[in-house]
Image (cartoon, rainbow, N blue to C red; front, side):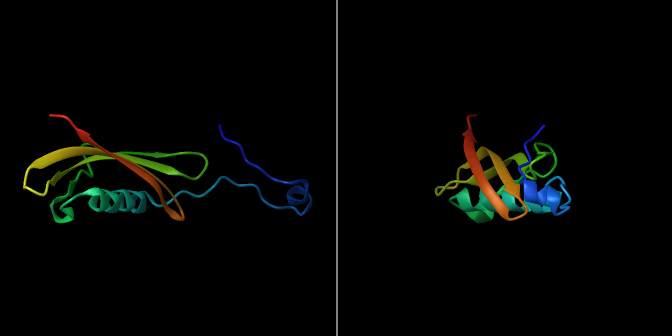
Length: 103
């Protein structure tokens, strides 16, 4: 369920009411992977999970949530694992949240 806001003139003008468009699934995943690289100290060491830990949900409001994990090395070469959750729409990335996963 979601809210769709329209005016009386939208109806009177015969405007078609339609659900919001979603970004392409691969585009949403690419945006999230790019966000993971931006958050990493060593972007070249990021290994983003596109299969095992990946979840993609399209919301009725046109936004797509991507959840995944990635590993990256610290400045001193120690590898750490992170979870990332991104929210995107057809205009691009809205937000990205990254948390380190404790071992």
